[in-house]
Image (cartoon, rainbow, N blue to C red; front, side, top):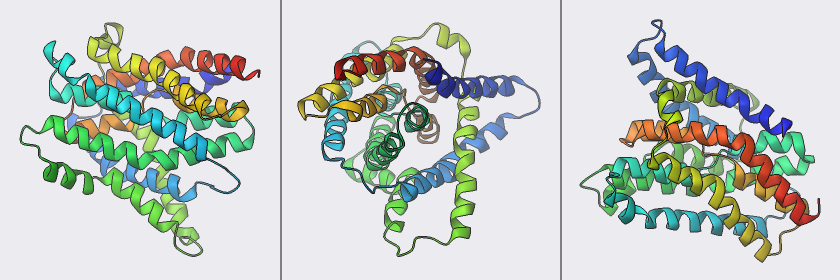
Length: 311
């Protein structure tokens, strides 16, 4: 419990700092808009690029794990999309639903990585990093496509495909995969520079989320916030562990997978919502609430999984 809180609490505190800074007279509204654009077009794509390029794939057998997580994630995507006719009837519009979808199907691999480094053997963190690299492109393709579809009244397949193809997050992830094919990799001076830029992504992104957050909404969450919180923190771990057990994943590998399933939604979905016309405020409230609840839900999921595996 203490390790998990130590991993998540700093993230939540940075969000609170961003909220306080937004209320201070030092920074203008234009500053925060510029920070969001910097994250969307430069910082987050660089982070994805470096993460994928640096992932250590050696010595890991991921067939059952990737299959289990991939099928579980696809199941969650389809279940969430199937909710659209029902939430539409209660007055939830397309932009808000796009944020419901995003905050249901995205996952914060960085929290998983930090917790894995503190709780598990070295191969646990390597496994989480590899899973992040494997799933980051389908997650971003899916979320960009859904946000484009539900925020554009004239959307068609061609326009959605175009917006997906030029999305900076997808370009960054795709370039990371392509650059893995370069013999000897990129020069050290380039990697050092990219690493410096990527380190700024999460912190600045968290500040931007806090700047767009109204804390009163966290205290009185709407159905559009509670629904993806349930989908992500309660339903998704059950789906993932069910597939994993069915495919014969056991022991520590099952606990690694449980950790990946239990983390809250990723923070960069807020930037995507802001830049593409989604309901960024809904996403910010949902991400903050999920992060707060995950202080308790991650230990609960890991404890239950350890009990199941006899650990």
